[in-house]
Length: 477
Image (spheres, rainbow, N blue to C red):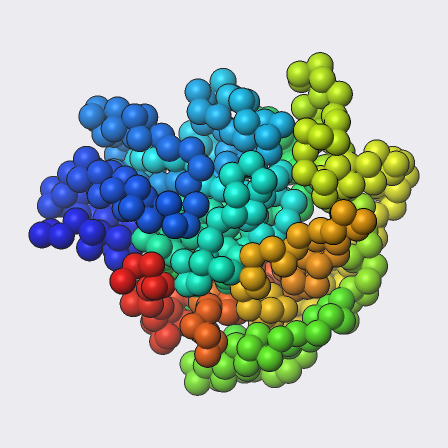
């Protein structure tokens, strides 16, 4: 290929095929990605830790033979441990923390032949749906650098959207794969609970709210990557239902005539921006054109109960993280070592009792049962990914008198995504719509527990009908 910068327009599957056919060497792919990161990252601030030496060393030896041999990849700077490389979790409290082992997910990523070039930015401990950690400064949206990338996988989404790499690691506890996918115009699938392992350091996180996967340019990349990373790990407390066949085989398979319910009303009752409503109606019309049965309907859920109970787990999780760090380091948490919002959440979590936690968990399980019942009548629920298009950087800042303000504002922004973390069901944000300002507005599709297959079939159909691979943000021109 004459111009190695053209590689940024290829998905990971195509890049790997060029390597297999010996039309490209892994070294060429890696050096092209490094050059692009070095050129674009000063304006986007997506990559916060470079691993170029490790990447070059990896391609100088024989890489594992897998579906992604030689393909450049980035890890989110949260949860995925890579031995010998710092993992800050977006916090000054962890800026010197260097794990001594790979997480099981990273073991599987390496086994697939991927070459890790660095770590991407995340908000402190992944708390907010925007990527503006004080430690590194704001990550900027490639479509408009004054706008948020979303979070907490905002660095990964910005890197993929700008073509630094074709896909990047992400995780999701309340929307953190789907939110940045929506803001940055890429594909983001949140798998079923326990589809990917969290070991060896965790069996689950926040009683099953958190899952691991990636943001990608293409649907097939997401499917192949989930094929190579999914499956139980030794000692996992529970497993996702086994898949019937490889997820890649679902891409392009017949969807059948799906029963799709759509709604633009937020479960918590917050107002929804007109652009997000338009995106859903446009996607519903497209699904009708594709031959599906589509009707307006929404799950009958207690959104306020869900929000209150979810907040209990979020605060308890923050307290557990900081106290776990204190236990490991011998240094008690102090307000000056973390961001103000993190400290407020920590103090809230410390005041909760074990009974508070279990009561909240039971409330979320009741909501999850109601949500699952909705899918006895429908195969897919279609809704906005977010209640607003990408907002301005600084939207989630707090005032000195009200440090929890950002979290309250965040709850309005992500009104649609947390339900699938509560229920454990798979869901995806698909980039089908751009507003009049040229900003991407993702559309959210959820399926039954364990049924990623339906989502991959539908996503491939949508991608073929309304391809987004040719849409690139201004920073790429």
